[in-house]
Image (cartoon, rainbow, N blue to C red):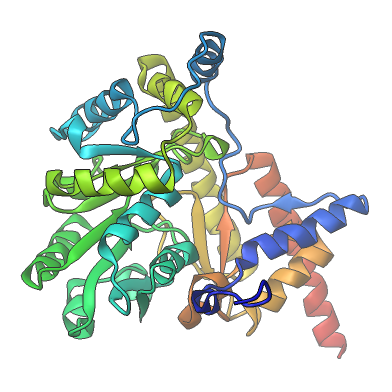
Amino acid sequence: MSLNEFASRLQNIEPFHVMELAKMAARLEQEGRHIIHMGIGEPDFTAPPAVVAAATQAMADGKMQYTSATGLPQLRAAISDHYRSVYGLEIAPSRIVVTAGASAALVLACAALVEKDAEVLMPDPCYPCNRHFVAAFEGKAKLISSGPEHRFQLSAEMVRAHWTDVTRGVLLASPSNPTGTSILPDELKAIIDEVRARKGFAIVDEIYQGLSYEGAPFSALSLDDDVIVINSFSKYFNMTGWRLGWLVLPERMVAQVEKLAQNLFICASSIAQYAGVACFTPESIAIYEERKAEFKRRRDYIVPALESLGFKVPVTPDGAFYVYADCSALSDDADQLTIDMLNEAGVVLVPGLDFGPFTANTYIRLSYATSMENLQDAVARLRRFFDARKVKSAAA
């Protein structure tokens, strides 16, 4: 094999189009254009003072060595306490594995569970990297069209209908990227029951669970001890670049995942881990809850604003910081529409192309993880953009 020949698995992994749009936007900014970014899902808030102070103190104290592959004991204990205080769940620290972001958690889960040619069911639309994690271990992501009538999520009925002899499990996200919608607890229980009846695995990505705006806090861990839950410090805890996340596993999986973590990652960043402990202080939690309320305020502004522009929002997002909007009344090519909005209005949105074929041409994703001022400016720019298109169309 020469350096010009690559592993065949790369054929199953597509480029991330949101990053391509980000590069286009960067070129326009270099030309002096002012661009409003509502593409990448990254909070505009940063880590609270106590978290930054904890990282600074850890460096000053020389706490920069490797940690256990499963994470600092005090961080695992803090995460366990968090499940108790927020969700009323008793999750033993021994079941928690600290990871280098949620991405590393998904890599470890897929490495442990996905065999060659095994199918994993997931909804279309879904976060593209999730299906690529499956492909990286030579499994096959089986995307199931999940429209607004299903809140863009899998249902128990879909699991029954699409499970085959080569299906091994499901990979879900609640709340979801790109839709901001959650799986209702009764439906999630029914899905897990279907998977258990077939001796499969259920991985639930809960990285946006802290940013749920409706109802009481809920985790899939309350439904089944065997469910595998992914979480992260990136979204609710505003620590995207720190690359820190965690897995909650059944006890019998911990030793196997630890072995994988030792070989693939050694450990998550020690500095990020010491900082992560400070995320759970009452002072930090109070800041996070204020920021969560601000995200909700932005959601409550942007959804009707999009509808006033001609987009349709068939399911109001109940979590995360995304809106998945139907643009079919405005264009039959979401990809080209986002390029035009960038070039002509200076607003970055993401086409459905990244999130699966069924909604690729008719939906766009908007991230409202930016200031209210930016959201209002973006709506004004888009209004002028669509008004100009109407004038051109009438003149033609």
